[in-house]
Image (cartoon, protein in one colour):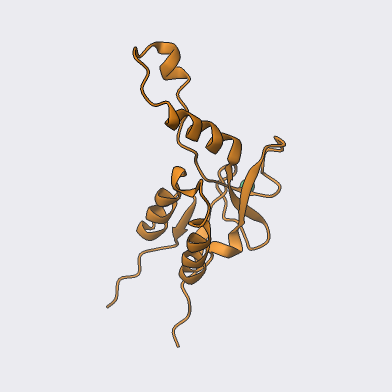
Length: 132
Ligand SMILES: [Zn+2]
């Protein structure tokens, strides 16, 4: 039986890998709410600097060591790194997240693409291993 490929999760703050139990991926739910509210009123009649500056940005998943995480008292949804450590766990976690009504507003698709390409800044393969 082949060993499961382990994925690596990098901390946004110190850029070092995060071990199981040492950190998590998270998305700011307040940012998700703001983004969804903006989506409900998408078309400003005139695009001003103010409206551009105030336009909600797509909610982004972050990865942090517990020790590196900003303590902003925000309302965040956390995913422990152990839950994305292998492809089966990443698939299971993704399926669970898909049941959340806010999930499609986040950039989890970019997390998955980064993981698969070995170029992910948050979750990544450690190296591409070509079958040979
Ligand atoms: Zn860190």
